[in-house]
Length: 581
Image 1 (tube, rainbow, N blue to C red):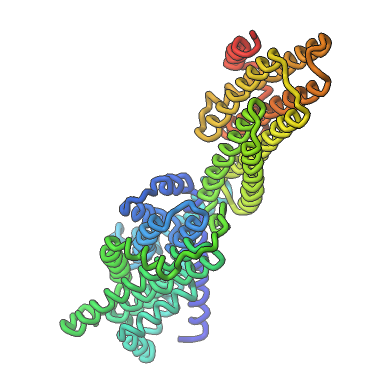
Image 2 (tube, rainbow, N blue to C red; image 1 turned 60 degrees about the vertical axis):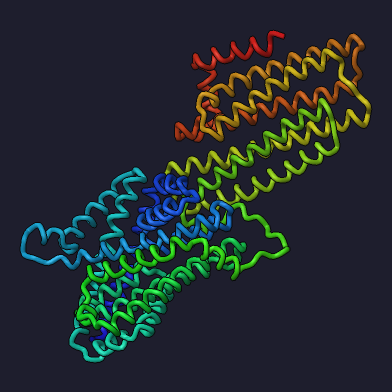
């Protein structure tokens, strides 16, 4: 093997790893909604978790990436350890897809159909289509499809280059002797584990093994222990990823390690005993690409069949290795590991923003309660909710800015921008809840009271606010478009109601029915409530814009007020409900 063969081998390996990486990233972006759907099906059911892990890994072509994702989910509280165990087991099976793709190189024969199925025949065509889609199409989906085809083509060219570079090794006695040495199961496992730990991808290390097997010098007796070791080596990525995480995430990484170590120990023992007693002739035969793919799949399926019924024991083992402590852990709302999967990261942000919306809207409603019946306990609770929404805004906003630096689809980019606007409005709603508390406290301190007429008017105003909050929550949390379209006409009614109530206050002031000090508090309350409705309008506008993939909220609202029959009809309904009194 000359220096040029070594350089070709390095170049082929680089192309192979690069192709696998860009194909996985493009597949993930292209199948973003599917990944989101798979994640949504996560339950405590073992089979559901197993299939989820298998499906996600088959899409992104990396069990290491899936496991790192799982560590991030557990760290953020998005997934329980019980769910994580099942997903990790599924990921081990899903990662075998790559080996089957690479085994296409085994296809041989003179028939035209067989020649066309060989990667060397169709890969150049896929590369050409990929270049056309990537360079000349404007749609992100088509560009990602092009990247998938290009990534696959680069991967297969890299595989072909590696195979060609090592082909001369078949005649080198030392190379053949090396793989005779790996027939020792322990050495084979160590070799597979070290290689995979270095390149941090079991799919890639299996591909390298397949390239070496093309020389005909790798027997099944040597290949099987190496494949087993590769499953252990791939755990390094998840272990490294768990540094700096909470105990739950560390347990998830240890489950991945213990699953692969126990599975390897059991089946390596079975393999060694079978070899010792029966000495099957198959183990001395040269391994083929498809044979290695079969061994890889079979081993991972057998590990899963062995340990899936014992997932509860793996969970107990993880708790034993990483026990709970008395010191409470800081809750991680968003883990930066989620940035590796932008669609799922955005979905996590949306769920947290929904929680934020419930807290902010709940705080505003409690603020209204404070106006009618003040209590220090309730006031303190509202302030705590306001602090909580501040943290939500800070963490979600910072995460969304980081997310925008990753390559996302146009659809995800618009959704991210809209969500960034929404959390700002939600935070202001919680601030207005505290404003209402401060108005209630001022009335308590100065022993101020409203007239009966003012109390009746305030109840009418707060009823309108309560309804617009309910519509906003339904629009944002449930995607209720009818509710979103009803927010703006009600906001216009609240604007008119504010002016009506201010005029009523001026009349009472002129008649000597209330004091100037009470008037200042009254004005502050009306302004706070009216501004709350403005923020509700902004949120509903974001929901409408997200549906239309439009970032211009104010234009959407102007268009709605100018020519919408729905707007006019709803305006009349709300006017009869709140302005007629």
